[in-house]
Image (cartoon, rainbow, N blue to C red; front, top):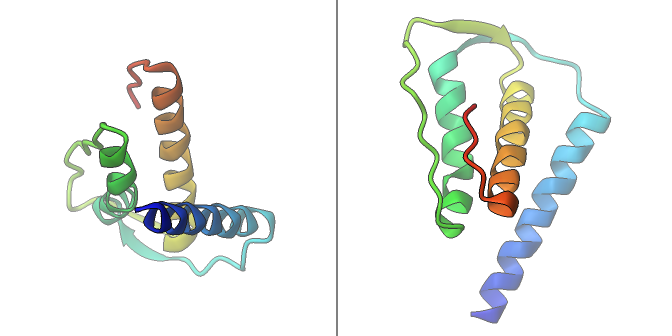
Length: 100
């Protein structure tokens, strides 16, 4: 159990460092047409385990399937995930209801 928790923490730290480097020195954007629903689902999937672990959940309002954005999928997903993660940490710390 302890080794599993240490491994999870190490993976989380590695992800934070990777995300920080993404913002510090982002690669040149590679824009493509991306479904907004796909971005929302990717962020929800990425953070669902952490939310569950903390006794919370992520509910994503259905996004119309015909809404698209032209963007670098990875960069925008990482930015959205960072915003949602900050909101989650505020919720965990303050137990405030956040509506985003």
